[in-house]
Amino acid sequence: MSRPLESLILFKRHSANCAVNKSRIPKKKREFFMECDCQVWIRGRTPAGDIVPRQSTGFSDLKRAEAMRDAYVRQGRAESGSGMPVTECIERYLRLREQDLDERTLAQHRLALERLRSYLENRGVFYAEGIKADHLESFKTDGLPREMASTTRATTDAKIRCFLRMAYRREWIKEVLVEKVRPVRAVYEQKEPYTDDEVGTILEQAGKINGGTHGYASKPATFRLLLELMLETGMRVGDAVCYDPRIASKGDSLWTYTFTPHKRKRTEKARSIEVYLTEDLQKRIEACDWLSPRLPFWYGSGSDPGFRRGCRSGMGPGQIRIR
Image (cartoon, rainbow, N blue to C red; front, side, top):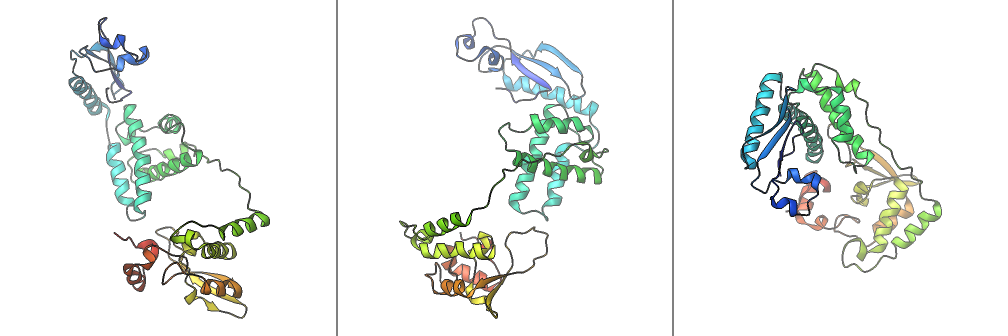
């Protein structure tokens, strides 16, 4: 099948004795069936907007027909293109953001922008100056998967808007497109917090889990204490599993634990947070069956010598990768 390019379409006008006419392929899709000896035809518009009338390419080989179509595209770029190509703008933007974003977030930016680039090229837009507000508005409905959740759409839109701001600031585009395009609003499901009875049930059942040979399933009482710690202090699970009772300090009536949250913006200055534990919870954590020699709630790499060496060097569990 031909590579999709909405500005110039390759198709076939099959002869009466072509095998595709006896196949189960729907009639509407048969013109895009290329596995036969019938000639390839072309129709559509060049990137410059010139109409290419329906005509035979003179070839039955798809690669040769695509080469002919690519020649139309290159000619259209030369006639209508000016400024910086969209592909180059995207690559420059991603290089500039490498210092601000972690690898996973950078990959998400790349995916969003590659989807936009593909959508623009399908409509004959290869240069940044050719991007219009209408393209960006249409992309939100036609360029993204229909089954994509509204929250993911909003996240994708936010990444593209960041790109448009930089594109205008660096004069890759001449219009402030980010102000012309309406942002996507995510629809979040309204969730109710657990009631006191539900919390009690969760803690009760957590202390009864059984059947595992390692980790939390092997020590249900320790797992319940982890949930109690999160409930009492409001700590995220990533911070709670790294809880070290030996560095908590005792006050007049409560224990104080100071830590640096693992989840924060990469460019944000690290800041410490204090949480408070009751005497009863602190003593039960100290006396429970620990999952690793160093931390009560951390297992796996927590018992590895490399983990302990990393901790002595100031690294947190989230920064260590055991290979």
